[in-house]
Image 1 (tube, one colour):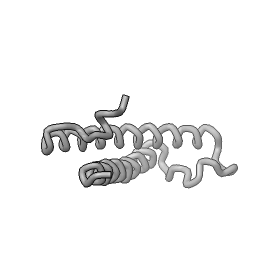
Image 2: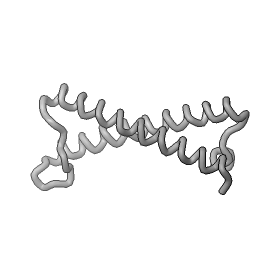
Image 3: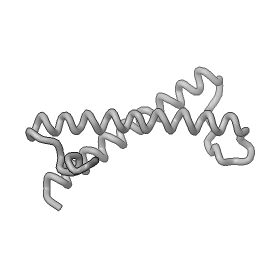
Length: 94
């Protein structure tokens, strides 16, 4: 694995992790504003009602997945602007 591949993996990982962290905080804040309380800390717990567990899982999962996608695509765009091409890992993806 070459240096550029390692650099791309680090950039993509960092962008995805940072976006997931920020998005999770935003979704928690939105949940508190809408529901008036904290989201379930463990949706799988038997003490969490199914509708609440499903709502939290869908809301947080979709929001974090979309944020990671946007961040990683932005990172790929920045990579292309800097290097003149997309990372090899993205060029080979189908």
